Image 1 (tube, rainbow over the protein chains, first blue to last red):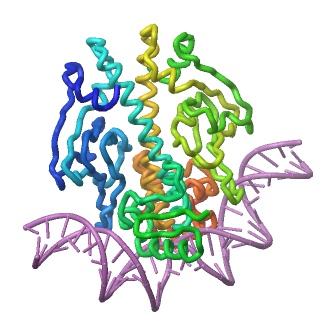
Image 2: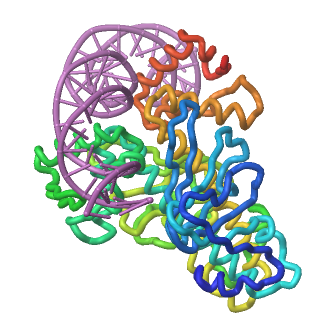
Image 3: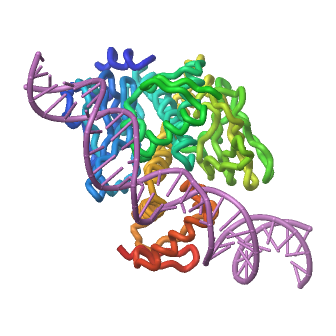
Length: 205
Length: 205
DNA sequence: CTAAAAACGTTGCATATGCAACAGAAAAAA
DNA sequence: TTTTTTCTGTTGCATATGCAACGTTTTTAG
């Protein structure tokens, strides 16, 4: 079962699922006091955001269709306020992990397959996170960029890649200063590691 | 069902599971060509290791009992060699995600509960990773340390914390230079943010 | 179309941090 | 025990990078 089938089977009466629509800019959920909530983004784009102690906005994660998120994925003692904001018109499936985890009274087929497809979605999520960790654990902007590029490149089997986000967002994703990143991009071009035309980048190594 | 129950029920005949023992220093698995492998560490300690292009050893993750790992959690196009090495005597459960994911022919109870408890293990894993990402995305050593400390502190509800690993390992976990980290620790003491006695640290803020 | 907002490219400067090297302390192995 | 290995604390130095500031270009909204 894939996500679309989950939606079709939403009628299952042992699990309380909500399907909601959100307009751009509205809050889909906050990570406060809904410990077991899980959300699946059916369509649209949404960001997991925090304002840190200095008041700076951090985009912690960006979600697209079929991504899974929710307070269930965060430690109990999350000391700063996290919330997910719709960056576009969004359609979201919301439910509680408790409902999934408890044994289904009706032993319904839907329940079992839902758990199974959830597991699959979550595995996807882990892969994303491992990728992110791999990049973030590089110590220089250069290494972060090159690692990011080579992951993009190996995904598409192509030395020519197109950045899927703005440079501003990329800097945020890599957790580096935007201007420092631009500078490093220039160096990479100057030293012949890459060529670049806007967001089209060619790996020359 | 928790992990120990999984082990007891290993007799399930629809899923091929192996239970193996490893001595300190031996390779538990490599992340090459076993795309769907999942491992559960039943006891012991193990590290996910890579030698990067410069020949430097990277400890990407450290696993303890009940942690879950395997190539299934990594992107298909992992261009560097990853392997898991036992850091102690280890007991490991190995199986393939394919076996889990395919519909069980016998519709056995074990299969369903295994998927369910796997989901739980994987959720734990995601929480760990989110924590790691939160720390790694801080831009200074100071912020990484303080974030790490405050997470430790909120877990134990105590301003006095004991580092659960050596400073050398911590520097690796935070992806920073060890000597630079020691220096920053000293600054934090000097400026009155923390007091420290070996690996016992008291948060003064 | 026009106005507003966001993204981009650039630069000077201060400093945080990686790196190398070393010696002493602590822990592990023999 | 003794020996060996790992961990720790420190420092000098070069440089990578955050930060602030600015004008220009591109995108979005009205």
